[in-house]
Image (cartoon, rainbow, N blue to C red):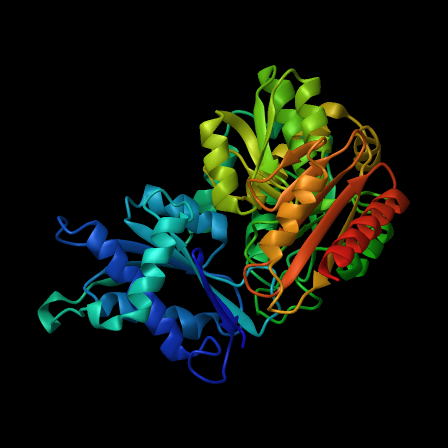
Length: 464
């Protein structure tokens, strides 16, 4: 079964059987449930407006047409941005004074996947309560009422919103366009043949950066696994060295994750994208607070404290990071997967903002990408999982682990995170399958792997 229903939307593989995969019927069903939710929430309004946009997946146009016409059938006006990015849609919702938004993308999943990601009127992902209500409406489709012929919604396309998004980025106070242009950077861009191939080169052109394009044709045929991890990025790593570029920029298909390659072809590290951008923002502002999730690197905490700010960890999930950022008046935050959230722009992960802030930082530092990376605290992560049978009580296991380490610094807002002096372990249960995820971080890869093995062994002893 590859149809995953969650509070943040619905995702699955194209084709197959209804209810098991993301079929046209499932796309219509959940678009109708979301549209009904938005209408119920804005019952006093005569007309509802919803922004939609999609990445370049092969199935994107089909899913977009299904979603758009379902909303029109509900009497909702649709503003279709066409080929777009997740952060572009997030920016467009408030600019268009819309009541919500739907992003049609499965993010870093392979090409056979697609998804409906759901936004509120602020252009932010829905909270758990709202997401649960939409799932409830979808399961009871008798509550969905379509419009009569005279009350159908209007559909209109709105082109060039990526250009508007770029203009918004360039207008941010801390984006130093002059310094970037003066630095005369040469950059290789891997857009994984999706909309990042449109947005990132266009942004770099506006910043006066020489751009060498790799896989930037938005045809949806991903040339490698689209998750921007080291093992998937050998082509750009080699091209950066061959072209003697200053760095490489990699984004996922919907452009909310940013990975960087140093001039020697080594990974700057997704975890350190946020660290570098935070270092720049905090340095320019003279301090400030930061947030990332519990599974992100300790390096952000170190950099934040160096600037005199306070670091806070949130539960995993963008909506949780955003809420914690608002609660702590955070100036920059995000996730360790290369997701930069800069409230001065908007509360969503945005690779365009990340690129502009990072290049500003590099231009100010007047050092190479590798030198900048080497200037930060070095931590190493290990990511593992334990497969369990459905009968095993995962919550009980996590409760036992928390109790076993009660004399350490233990955080239980999302699974169990145990902080030691020089390393940490985070244990989380999956929401979709019977597994425990085990994330560790330490001062060397060997230590991180050893810590993971230790906790795997301890959990297996509890199970026996």
